[in-house]
Image 1 (tube, rainbow, N blue to C red):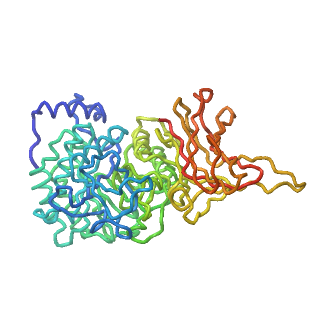
Image 2 (cartoon, rainbow, N blue to C red; image 1 turned 180 degrees about the vertical axis):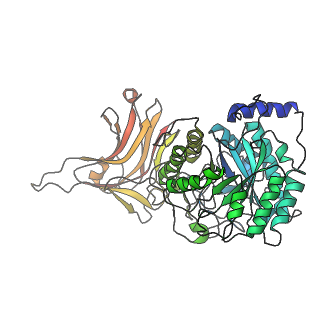
Image 3 (cartoon, rainbow, N blue to C red; image 1 turned 90 degrees about the vertical axis):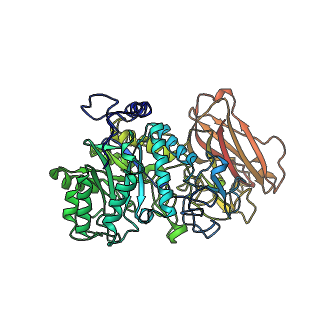
Length: 570
């Protein structure tokens, strides 16, 4: 491993100062400009950086990870549709899908352009994430002369520069997938020696994560029954990295203690590691028992612990499994994992993943609802669990989890961030599996092509009269529970299609925290069996209050449909 520089350039010194301010310094460090970021006491997100398309300017020149060829209906290997609004047009490529529900073209980004990597690290900085574990896959680096290796190296170099600029930390995580028993050790040794430290000089960066004064490297896949490397080979490679002065983390099976779903005989491998990180993705249960058992095993041995937390999981577009297989539970799934890590006093975690849209584990911005995915192919959205969540909700939630786990913020058993910071505060097209869902018994029906957009709308049927023959009084249904601040620009819009004259009286109203109901009315007579946009700007008396419920008021008789309901604070 190259000897570390004893003098820093002005740019490197400035980067160290920024990193020390953003991430804190190691205990007992003599100067805030002398200590690189640490692994313990922080949360780093796995960074794949593996998406490509033919026009991205990379040596690969092909689609990768979105699909093997141009993505189109039925031809995709990813589950969660990305929100691409922040990217420049130059990094986006057209697909074979129909336009998004909002009419925008269905385009996808490549991870190769600098602008994309820069945007990702800007998101980390702006939302309080500590940084990234840069993935290096055996399948990419086994042939150093291949286009895949060139792409991997380029993304790593761009990530280093972005981490230094934004004050984030980063370290290398090897995924042994794609290696064989025959080349297992040699590929890792050669890549570290010739590329990571030999040409990219990643560990020379002031942003490179250290622990106990040593650069960090993670080896993911040790002991997995479907990954290469015998126990003897794995122990040798761990000791080889340690002999180079590195702090070695092992990504190991959840059953590492009991050989459950793991290769037998790996006890000496696990004991050789500085830190263990059991893989939890795919485990839908409470992570507290796993954390307690892992700590009980590791603490007496003097080894460190890196629990894995993740937002949810699904891969129905790729593996034909069920949609929304491990639900995110509107953020509760990730948050409770983070709460358990904090309660256990661990202080650090690995967040899986920053950008893995493939298996719907990404926390990077994603489509919010049916208006932001192609109209001719299912993709998961942030609102898939029935609650409207903004595209950046999981990015913001991950930042809050980072602060809580690290101890920089207090323990909070409940999610401390709002569903959206605006301008869109709430939106639904009532589409099943992608949009916010009503909490009442009102019928959400398939409209047979008669919805304003998509296939479904909210059908409202008034009472058909009382037993004495008189018309029933109008009834208000609390359709959505929300918590939306009212500003001078708060506006409600929806589309109304009355089926009969009495249905013209159906309205969408808002209940405030002071008990007052803000009622809406169409501007004029609404035509029957046609969609009319209704817009209502809240007046001054509602400002400073909060909307607690979105109501639908049904007349005594009559039928109407409601669709594409939105509340904004523009």
